[in-house]
Image (cartoon, rainbow, N blue to C red; front, side, top):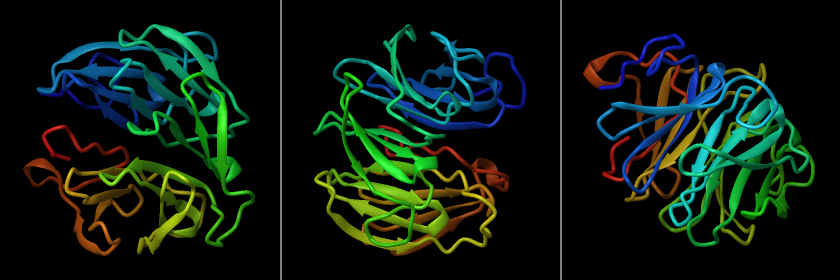
Length: 258
């Protein structure tokens, strides 16, 4: 079982956020305020960690999210306040980084078909698409706004089973679904009680059947949507019936569990 609890020891966390699972079932957790990545097996046993506070190789500054390429085993970390994407090998060794003009970027998702990375460039109110060599391929959103073609502090991002991208457009209180060519598929509202005092750090995850989960740490809940963007449930409790206090990162595992 995961040890949990606040702290700096192995298996403890300080504001954990993004998570991803590799092909062996291991789970990588962004331990944001401890400026590190912790890795556990699928049963919750601690394996290893990498990172400490700083801006050099093997260092992070409040990382927020993480992505994994199943073909190469490479790990991509959204190193938020170093304004870069950090690339690690499967053992956590630093391979390089890509700045690409980010400002406080949060969510990151690896697309298994396009083999590109989609990054929520939060402070610039854009989504940037990057290849595995760290080159900027294209950008969605040209200026901050609430039109169909714009964003206002996008945060969470995930790939659906159809291969589309769902993005939490936080200050606009909505989710936008895109095809990989940049076409908007649909937009739906997030009916949160949160008030506009800065963006909220919600994350997204998609299950194999197309169900979409969105965390609302301010509302202390997880919204559940069907593939058409209709809200079908609000989760306020976790395992054992304990109330959610500040849910942020969320993961649908290979076995279809969140």
